[in-house]
Image 1 (tube, rainbow over the protein chains, first blue to last red):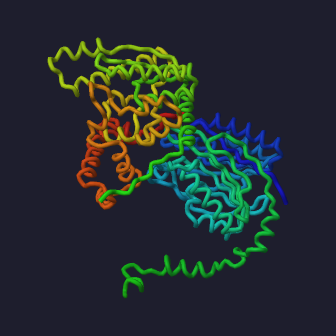
Image 2 (cartoon, rainbow over the protein chains, first blue to last red):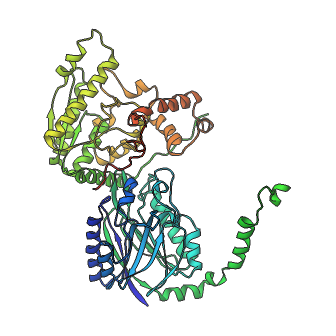
Length: 294
Length: 277
């Protein structure tokens, strides 16, 4: 099966959900007219990124009763959407979240699990940590969503892979940093390297939508990409420019790559469980490990 | 032991794209379309002026030449070269009378006091002109001088946005060369031009080329001072520079507000300047 995917590499207004929603509707319309069946927006696409104390005032529940999700759910009758937002749960914890909408339904919500709280980042001050990594079914096969720092750790993509995901949907609001004589900033090169590595290691499609624009002195580098199960680059958006990147994904590539390179078939999950149990689970407090006792 | 040369080469095209985008974004989202720059005839303000002109269009940039009677004559000439090369709008407002009104109240006022008075007067003129021209003040401070505190608080360091503040002097120079500023400005020794014969490197006691490599290790690469000594920098140099960075940190922060309430500006009232835009 082949389908066209659209990556909405957009700029946003900080804390202005109505304006950002308008932009979503416009991009959805454009994507639809280029026959895309799924459009992927960046991290926090409805709110902007450096929210700080705005986090609690821009939250919206992904449901038909919410005035901002209602039009998005309506639009999802014609094209599947992945949108970034702040989710407030029933106990008033706020999460950096992405929602997959299809056929008027909220199919899946992912809460960002890893919140960078170091250097320039301060997400852990304002948001709750998500506690689930789950793949979910779409009409394009089984997919998984991760948000920025989630895929700066190898464990969430690995878990999604084992949970059946063949299509990785990564979204970011990644600030550009790391100046050298190379044209691409170090942060861009790092992310491209790991996205290619995940596509290769997991013999899966890895789609990454990053935003562009500025918030105070932070620039967002764009450079959205799609890698195929061979680790080959299918499409890439320019750095720093608003772009609607469209590409065709041929899901039959999964068959061809995995017949050649059955890494998934050979993955020994029981061994992983045993060794994780030994490393993490079996250690008694106060007891030396075998290595230390020598 | 001599240290290995630290490579501070930047990709000037990438930097140019990011910085012009930054200027355009930060000015327009604040509701303005114009920029004002104090053009001293030196490299940094020239670079800011070039970037602002590229970002906003030359007709939307106002360059101010603000000489004092003891300013080097070529400062004015070099600033004029920039104005003509870019086609930006320009005003020349001597600060001599304003400064002397204060300076002459104290017989034999120290150079430092006089220099700070001039720097702060230039800030006053800059901000007054931003109101007239309806533009934002674009800063000119580079990363080296910000870290070393080689600035006048509320003087030359005052601006609405600062495109050069994350470039070491060595890197700003590369960008300036790539962007095509006049060679006369590229080649002359950096100076604050606050008194005759003043040069940055003379005042600091070391060259930018040398201190930028050390700052890159200490700041960007998070080297401990001891590691810099092991890497071949003289211990007295390392200690002097790191102490200077620490001592001048106050110039980089808002003054501390004494916390009394549950929510205090500067501690837990946290929004970006770009709030809502």
